[in-house]
Length: 274
Image 1 (spheres, one colour):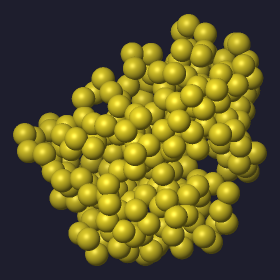
Image 2: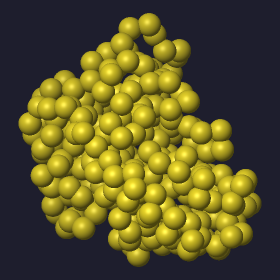
Image 3: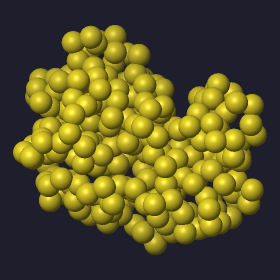
Image 4: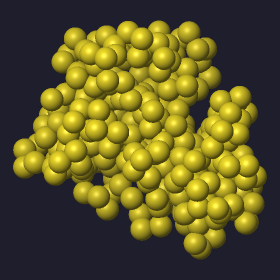
């Protein structure tokens, strides 16, 4: 069975890592778009066209499910994807874990890209799922780009800047960009002790397996991982090797759980996937 994951950059790595941990027997097709990245500043029509053309290629390559592990792409184009491919091919999208964080009753901050932080999409998400609790919106300029380039010095600088603007009473931080779990440990080190991070990668992976009726224990076989870069067959870009999950995926084995989640992070298994 083959699952395709589509994103402009490394935001797909955390969800891919969870799929590789939970169901290593699956064959995975990773579609990145270095020619069009980043998608955040692009128009809705650009992102939709890119996703539709890539999803068609994925289905031609045998994909039996399509995963969009990107908040921007999900809100922009998930309806168009589902209109074309479902019910024949399940389409799984991603939303930040605001609902799960709000359920704890703690004070919340959402770290996201500059565009997402200022978007009506995030405003609606908070209005719908934060249970009326105040939510601090923390833009993280340059963080996703640093992660895509494997530039840990720049990532550390961006994290420190965002941490300095995060209210000290926010003990729950939602990672509102799918790139950010790749530097979760660095983010935790920048925040007060006891802070909990919430990301959606595990939930999206588990929802994918539910849609495929594959919720049993992982089997002993290991499937293939194929990478497509803006329509061309290739390998994970060098920047992926700066992240433990990227290195594990490049090695093509099962991804250990301890590379996916630090002890202080929570990755809800039910909510932030659509």
